[in-house]
Image (cartoon, rainbow, N blue to C red; front, side):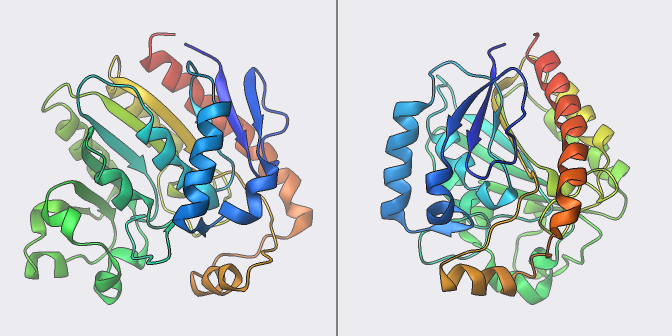
Length: 290
């Protein structure tokens, strides 16, 4: 398997071993959290020029950059449609009329012609509860292009609006993982894997978003099931601190109740992430036969 690739937007992965690093800190303010489509196209053009054609798992820094996955999946070479499996505590399919952001990118991925279905796995956020139902893009759910796999969230509203088959709701994480593995075993479609570590319990790794309840072995079990099927992968959810200059980003970040990270805790939490990244990368490389 090729070397991992670090897209260095926020300096959270400076000491990452055995990886190619693409310096992108000049883009941090412009694209962190979200941006307009003109900026997005400019970034896509720069990444097209800077990303080597052959690379392994891509690391992007904070979950504030999870929308970068859209650009990676869009350029993923494949002769056949593939599924996208996203581990995330949030659906990332929320309405955002101003371009694309870290909470809306899944809708853009679901529209790509070479993507069959997007499965967002491990959602325990209230974003999929009835109070926020209207904020979700519903058309790709109706079309079967997106499926939600939720944990401990009341999603009965989905049945009322005819979306029961797109919501797979569980109260126990082990039951969710078993059901999702059974779903994967239905066929051998290739898969692009995107991991946001905010799906993990905070005792496993701290991120700068509200977090889910998965353990590392839950994700590892699914990765093992993808043996020989991965066409690409990325990992986000590092922890970093950034003070937005743009007022609208400060406002939306506050609206989303992003937790405040104390600078004195940052180094310890980033060190914790190193061990988690190593285990995830080991599993992905094994699934790729490396």
